[in-house]
Length: 81
Image (cartoon, rainbow, N blue to C red; front, side, top):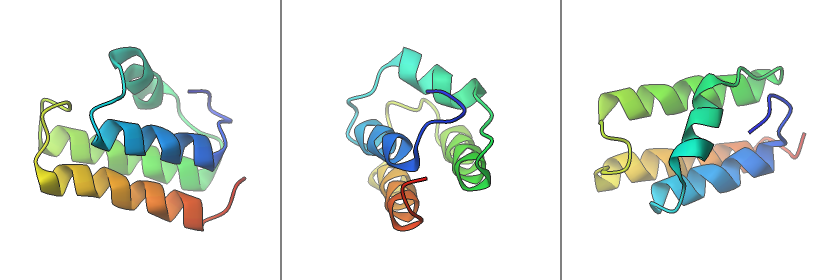
């Protein structure tokens, strides 16, 4: 995931993450890639807080998965920058 990834690309990743369909490589890319887009950077930081709150990231509660889905929805609603 690049620092210039469009918001919809990150939103799609968050949906896959919530569904348990993302891989370690994709997760690490999101975790370390600081974003130039302030909305994406805020989403990245919030995603990290969700992950830290309920490790391991692949074994999430329903509430944790919904947190990723809600974040994906917010990104989609913010536009396709």
